[in-house]
Length: 399
Image 1 (tube, rainbow, N blue to C red):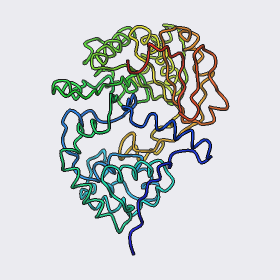
Image 2 (image 1 turned 180 degrees about the vertical axis):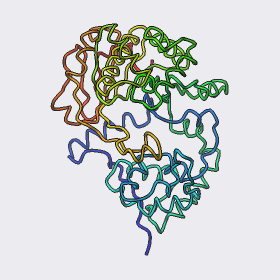
Image 3 (image 1 turned 90 degrees about the vertical axis):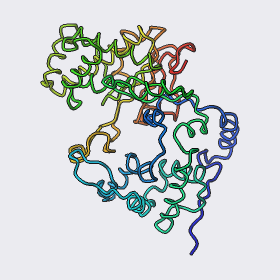
């Protein structure tokens, strides 16, 4: 029996209502050929620094992508059988073709998901595949993709240019020396890859190895970050360093949107507890909330746009966290308050014309409950998953 065809309908992502679809088509036609500006790209800067070929289909599409392996794991597939590395270095599947076949065996699980939509789009438009991925076509897919990945046109920089990317932001911790960005700059390549300042490892007392992270912050900044004033100074120094590599934004993945405006004495007390690993969960939440306010204060000085995307219960599966580490797909959206949570920050800085805060939400009920109309120029973009608070035209994530 012939393999089912892979046919991409041109309106597959547009509304079903005929009138709305017609409007969407006209809008899409106006923007489809414009350059891509990606302020939240989450790609690995080493791709662009090394410009090495992607090794094989499984290592590109399956092993590093928690959107894929989280679905397979939820249906009983062991992560080790998908080649996902373990913390303890225990052996995992190393044959990429076997991993790919296992992925193909379960590809039906992705029907109706955004993951399936972008995968099918990639398979059809990048690799000219015109049959669906099934167990019977797994090797056809593997061989075609592997053959293309070996070609110079499929190296990271060539794809960057083919996709008409004007600029893309990667995301790094303050404890990252940004060596990949240094290499990109030194290479002379003209592609614009910038960094974004993601301080979670050094502002969240519940982040693993928090005291060690503070020590690393001290080392890289050259400032003793083990006291409150030194800690803030070290963060300012690292922000300036990131700006030197193109950073235009900060990025905060806190459990909630809570902000605080605490006294200096209380800040010093909480910091002393944090760097010794003695924060209670409530104290850790207070500290994170204070640090969002401190980040807003710093943004007034250095102009970095704040991106806050709260509301994910990260590493929900303790066994998965223990065996494979963080960000392995065990993240679950939670109900998120913005109105009360952001009030301390907005009371202090919300009327400053030079501050821009971009809020992401995983909680769709926010749209009917917490429309943030408190500040002039505030707006909610329905369906986009983000809110922009005070965004003057001269101040945007990408100048």
